[in-house]
Image 1 (cartoon, helix red, strand yellow):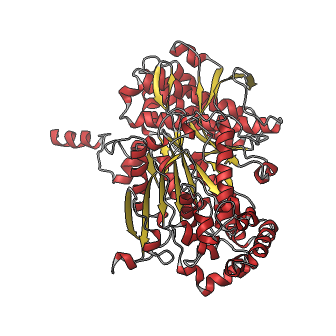
Image 2: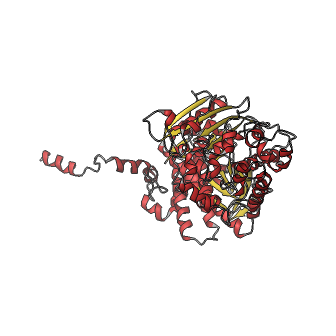
Image 3: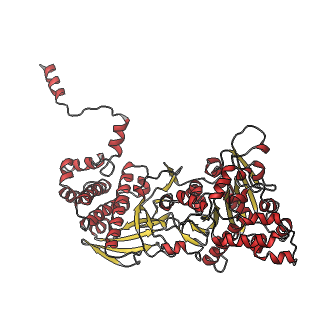
Length: 632
């Protein structure tokens, strides 16, 4: 009888234990209404402690929220985190079901953000005390998403109402019983941008084509504000530079109140839009918190929207829509206190050539805090001497426009980086020719009659070094030319290239001036030279300029590619540039990498460039290379 009673009691046991597989374990521990669409284990547990049914709270959240608000016997952390998740669930439903213009969509997310904010800053413990807890990560993500949706919905509302500029700090806006006040607004429209066009949540972007996506974990909504310069500004030859028009921003919501009760009862929120290039932390209720930020998204959006792959071919061939003058693109809003890196792409290329290098430099937190990147975009069909003059002019005018006094750190200790033909141009920006080119190419000393007849060539034959550059990196640059440019395929491409009429007319006049005395040189100009045929290793221009020394005070480096590690280095090439043409005597460093001609895309080249930039900025190699989060 006793034994029977024991078995009956054992049959009534309510607790059973089993082991979950790793996937189920992860879903149970980390899944929540935002990631899996179901309430988290922690929230269900908190609701059950009140004697409520968690499933009923999904369909009737309002009653459960009211019960949780009054459940003071529960710890604040458990109560507030559950409130945040339930409110976010309500907001997600409202967002899906309500009309686009329904203000309740905004107020529902404001409720969710407020509860999450209360947990983060008015709970039982400080954020640092909960640093390793999954629950705080869930609530932080709930806050960030709610803020993202408030920002997106308010932006859409502003666009419908005809508001196209960043809000004025201190201004207010009412929405569904809430009062929004704009606090720190660090967004400034780029030069020539007439309006804010779009706000793109970075969390929703899938970025392909970058080796890494660099972002910074923290508080706030990671967004990209789009404010592109007007088309006429982008095409204006008098405007040498332009911002990309894609600005990273971190949006925050703060809820006034000196106590938990005050925060829970408030219907006021302060909106901040901060520039993550200016700061990586902020103060929230007396605590220093890291800002969430995405540094790759603005760059990726700019490249994706620009269509550079197609334009690079148009520019080489000189088609009707081709670029006709160089343009300097600023990868971030100009900062007078950051050092400047200028990147110059190669033949038939565009700023896309720097996609991974620029992204890796901006992703390296130590370099990002010290440098800003400018990318030169220029028509590669145009002869090198013409591009040299025009690129120099564009850079000088850009520095003068941004720093008229010439005293900012950004205007000094500049680094030039050039690939292929861009490396040739970068080197020529750093030489002083004096009379050397006149003598070597045309035997025309100063004050001679021949020099006077060829006066139109003066801008192209008298080269002076940019004075504000003291570091340069040349990648796969054919300083002495390449035999490939004489290949039949290169000659065929040359025949397809159309040059601007001004260059054709100037070349014809020069040919006429030379015809009587120097018929061989005259023939060079009779058919206007292009960017391709001036890269030949037989080019008199490159033969003469390759012998010019780089100006004193400039430290320069070579990164050279070779297709195979086999054979003598002196006879190696990358399929386009021979080693002998890329090699420079006197370089501070030379790194040879087994690669094709696009060596700037290789991890080895990128690491070498980061090393050089660190040395240039006075950073020790012991500093962390990339504290920002690099993800795929």
